[in-house]
Each structure stands twice: as structure tokens, then as C-alpha cells.
Length: 494
Image (cartoon, rainbow, N blue to C red; front, side, top):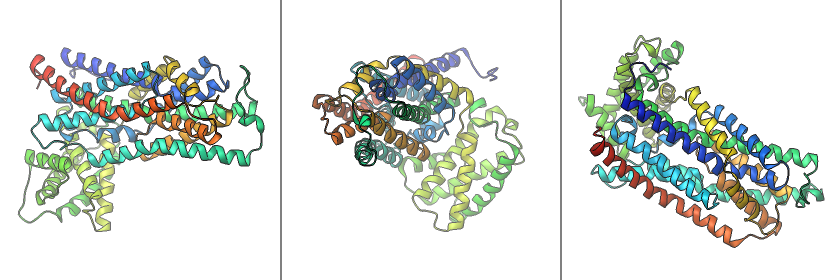
């Protein structure tokens, strides 16, 4: 990484501070969320605690390293568009710090109390708080700028995950009892002796799968925030994927020509919106979702700018560093506008729709990337976090949900459901709560087994789950407002 000429002393300080907070968030996420994955193997004596957390930490690390990045950029689309495209501004810094500080505060608080709250809920609540505060402080209609469509998708995945965990784990245990007639599978461990080898192998497999899936999903949240930090402070190096090859740029050039033809059909004759006015119009549309004639005119104009800037380029390194941030902004606005128009069913002609959606994906390849060193840093933080501070959450999950000791079948059923749910969410690019799926899965197996539930613990879990979003919305809004005051009035940033 060549930082020469990119960093001043002040920006270097902010970079280190922001990266430190982002990696701290992943570290806390590791011992807060991943403790759920090791609770079953520890309480069935499949693995000793030390070996379990080390193994889980390694699998989390591997999951992060092999992740796609879809969840990372899904999280970013929840943020106010003007803060995303101006990530290097004072308001952009305030946003990133507000998100990270709010999430860390709530995660540490619930960990201290031994409550398996969701890091996904925590971060998303903080994002909504920042969006709401930004709309209020900027003088716009309250709530404008929050991506409510994407928020609805995320809410659905987060709210459904406890139900999926509870119901599916309960059903899986019932089906297992009907199909597999091995009494030793349905008994609690006796003393400290490990389970039979075949059961031990099954529980090891499910722990491995949940840990890997957790890394591949939750690790991406920190990666998305780190990319915002890097884009804001080092746009010359990270605004665009400089490793995109000439063949990809050639495909993009062909795609842009098809997009120009498709978009120009929607522009009324004689209507022209260019320059800053075009950027303002696309930002307005992404905030409000209201389509006007000038929306298509602005989209077409910005697309022409992208096409002209990339014309004849065989490498993005050929672009001057000063142009890379503005090109990223143009690409972000055009790509997200095409995506939102498509979801609003504004493209009715199938060939036109196909050309524009293909072009949108080609544009995203230039901006939606995660450098390998970012993956390694997040993977290491998450993995080390898993190995430290796990005990509080493990005790709650292993001892305090059901009235009886967890059986081998219960542990396996809960983890199989959690693993499958997280992998499905990862494939769809949706953040899902490992905590919710696994904790509710264990509760489901206890109910299906007639083991009974400890009402005090279940009540506290539900209370923590219900309070996480509103508390983090408040923390995000308050920290963002405080951050704006500091960066503008104390530090004098713009």
C-alpha cells in the first residue's frame, strides 16, 4: 500500500483511530456473538472450552477470508446517500465514529450482563439513528434519507430469524427422534465424559459450520465500515478497484453504450440536467424515491460523464488520483439509481431492463471490493475476540435457557438450523443474527423436548432483543450529533 502523498498528520491520526474502532467492534462481536456457536460443544463435553474457542475463532477467521462482500455493501446502502458519497467530510467522519461507538457501547453492556443480544441489530439500529439525526439536523423532512426499502428487507431477516430458529430447531429435533432411534443421542452428558465418537463428530461439524457462517456474515459488517473509512481518507487508493482488468473495462464500455440508448428514451426532449444539479437530483431521488422527468435526465447525464471518463482506459490506474473520488461518486449515484428505478418497476421493456441491470452490476464491480488486507485484519480481530471473553454468553446459552441440561440432539439441531439460516442470509446479502437464530433454536429444542424454559432468562433475552434497536437508534443519533459538534466546532473540519 503506497500512502505517499495521500496522508497528512491529521488524516493519518483519523485513519488509525477509525480503523482501531472498526477492528474493536469486530473484536467485541467475536466474543459476544460467537460464544453462541461454542456453547453447544462445551455443554455437551464435545470439546474442552479452550479448544472450542480456539477452533471456533479459526473458523470465524476462515469465514471472513472467503466472504463475498455482499453483506458489507448491503449495510452501506442503509446509510444516508449524501454521507456515503461524502465519506471524507466532517459529517462522514462523525457518521462512522457514531456507528462504531454506539455499537461497541451496547455490545459491551449486554455482554457484561451475559445477554446474547444481536450485533446485527446493534449496528443497524445505530445506522437508523444516524440517518434520522441527519435528516433532522439538515433541515429535511424527518426520516428522509433513510433507505426504508432496504431497512424493511433487513428488518424482515432479523425479525424472522428467531422464529426460524425456534420452529425449525424444534421440528428438526422431533423428526430426528422419529427417524433415529439411538437413546444415547437424546440423553444429557454424564459427568465430564465426552459423547460417543459419531455424536462428537456431528457436534464438531455443526460448531464448525456456525462459526464459519458467522465469520462470513458478521465479519462483513466491519469490512463495509472500514471501506467507508478508507474511501473517505484515501480515495486515490480505495475509491475504485484498481485491480479491474482491461477486459472488464471493455465490457463496461459496451454496457455503457447500451445503457445510454436505454436511458435516453426516458429523457423528455429538450430537458437537460448536468453537473452538480444532476448529482443533487440523483441524491434527492435516492433519499425520497420520487421519480421526476429530470431524474432520468440527470441519470443520463451522469452516465455520459462516466462513459467519457473511462473511454479508452485499459486500467483505472490511468485515471488521475484526483478524479477517482468524483468518478466513484458518479458510479455510486448511477448504479444505485438504476437499482432503485428497477425495483420501482420503471423499466418495463425486458431488453431495456436486462441491459440496465447488467450495466449496474458492471459498475458495482468497480466500487464494491474488499482488499485482502482488510479481510485479514477483520478476520484476525473477530477470531481473537472469539477466544477471549466468551464465558458470560456461553453460560447463559448453555445453562440458563432450559430447565434441564442440553442433550446431544438438542445441541446438534439448534446448530444445524443456525448454520443453514446464516448461509442462506449470506447468499442473499442480508445481515442475520447468529445470536437470535441459535439462542431461539436452543429454546425451541427445549420446548419440543418438554425440558421446560427458564422464564426469567427468556424474559431478559426478549427484553434485550426488543430494546436493542430503539436504544441503538438513540445512541446512534446522539453520538452523530455530538460528533458533528466536535468535528465542526472543535476540530474545525468541513
